[in-house]
Image (tube, rainbow, N blue to C red; front, side, top):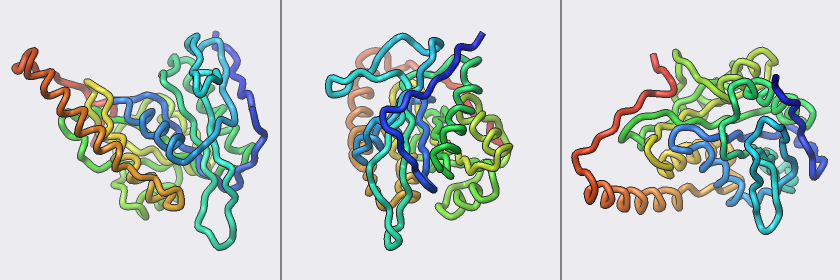
Length: 252
């Protein structure tokens, strides 16, 4: 039996015509890294948390304040008629929910969007592609408007395949409800947290939200340093060791 999900609000906000970014862990943790990066660099504050006894029993501590495993962040920015601006809301977690919890969680997020005036959802996913973090992200849209937006920002559309987890449910529920949901699929290495793959996703997000001045360059520098360290470690242990991975998304 699935436990009830509850969204506890620390602040009661409305985000008229806003955009929600969703980052749950995926291959290479690229989605979680990217979503947390948006929160840090955009100065977003915690506005809500999602509670369930089905979630792992831990709390995230930030600046001495405990928060539940799934958090919702937003900024206090006010858009004006002279500014190209979208209110931004970001959902972040460090764990993937149990399969039986995924659908009600995705539905709760879309209900929250309806209640708060959020019109667009961008969900981030990593796709296992060994040695290919430099590939440009692909995308899927739940509506024609979402697909047009992907085209506008130069994101190649995925025509055939399967997307699982939170992103998969958000897509088909978004199609059913007429909500613009876009899933960005970034190539990632599965054997370690892939900062380079996260930066590729952030490049697309930065195009969608230019007023936020998201700079993925620090993530690229972090990725280069990480790759150097891992290469040295691999060479010192077993230079012949190779790994194979299955794609979490099936491409046509």
